[in-house]
Length: 478
Ligand SMILES: *[C@@H]1O[C@H](CO)[C@@H](O)[C@H](O)[C@H]1NC(C)=O
Ligand SMILES: *[C@@H]1O[C@H](CO)[C@@H](O)[C@H](O)[C@H]1NC(C)=O
Ligand SMILES: *[C@@H]1O[C@H](CO)[C@@H](O)[C@H](O)[C@H]1NC(C)=O
Ligand SMILES: *[C@@H]1O[C@H](CO)[C@@H](O)[C@H](O)[C@H]1NC(C)=O
Ligand SMILES: *[C@@H]1O[C@H](CO)[C@@H](O)[C@H](O)[C@H]1NC(C)=O
Image (cartoon, rainbow, N blue to C red):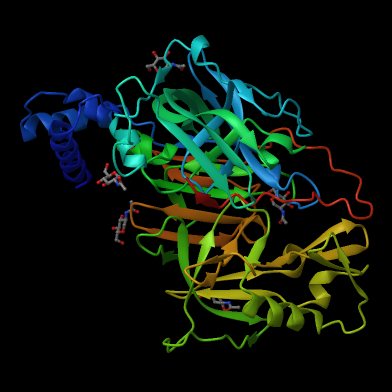
């Protein structure tokens, strides 16, 4: 069943290849360059290709989502031949992988996170290649061949993230080395060829942050993301799951068909740049929040974006205000004060889970997400707690303020993205436990567990030591 679909994909690429310059990007395209192929040949090609599936990938994870500590999660990947290890922020809100490159301007030189920063040097990799502006990858990125493009002009990129930081440079292609799962908690190095950004210039937080990393690994669904490229060359399925562990740091990040635990899912809104799911209700404790309906809407429906690259959760003002009010009304005697402009904080030294209500978001197809007080409140000192919910006032898209679910709500649960079926789901989960994924090649089911790469030493939690800007990596423009 799968084979037929992929044979069609091959056919499509083949005809595409005839109509534009054939300097192609993916393995599968390259093979057919300028040659006639019968459907049978395609099918046997696909069979061989299936023999090379990476199938289940275990990404080693580090970091944590605590706003006063690292505030982000990162993975270790190898790039080039011989492979060099890079530590990159995992971000389901953007669509390309980029790393700081040799000779770049304003790249961070040191980091409070205990990782050794690297610069990618195409000259030192025997498998590195450039991507020129006339290649399909580049024209697809820009919807057309860019003006003034000559065959020797590099394909440039620029990404501006939601916090105003930016990266720019040019695309290169090289091997990425990942850990393929071959047994219970057993992996072996395996590789694929991908196109990624070679960062020449960083600005904003990307140049100056004390929590600096080597780059960002966009896990979006666009064709340019690493997972889409590996899937297009038949290496993996477009299915992945993460469990971001805010208790121990690190957690699970795995690519492959997850078979256990089973999670309930909700549809991904089609034709959106991000992972949007449809929110239909909000409850504080057991009472539903009165939600403002749209002018022509009969019921409440709003897209919420799932984004592992953002630390907190951003709600439209007309939900944020009543929500926070309803939460705090549970403890009318609290003395509230504001820390670092955006954070409402208070003194409390008993169990917050007993004192405050949980918050439940309801999604299409009766999937819900309950966030407990110890998750949406965070400590900046033993007895000082701050509200993690943020207002997205000022951040609007199509006239509607964005609804953005970052690590605050994603962590300490298993989040499952099935892009083959366009669904996303989650379940409460202890990230120290393993998840089971099926190897396409052998049919065997393997367990993947948590990793915990080096993290930042917790900063002394005194006064207002919150990072001035938290990662907010939702992609805005490219
Ligand atoms: C990538 O895989 C190929 C084929 O399996 C192997 O020959 C090569 O050494 C690998 N490269 C790296 C960097 O692991
Ligand atoms: C992404 O790739 C698929 C198949 O490779 C293709 O059908 C589709 O048109 C591409 N999408 C864009 C936006 O280029
Ligand atoms: C969430 O969904 C589950 C399963 O449908 C249901 O049992 C549970 O009561 C719901 N929780 C809330 C708070 O609505
Ligand atoms: C997609 O959904 C269909 C129908 O529910 C199911 O049979 C199929 O196994 C799913 N595919 C994947 C890759 O999850
Ligand atoms: C999660 O699982 C680990 C290992 O099984 C256990 O030590 C830990 O107490 C569990 N944590 C919670 C919150 O249940």
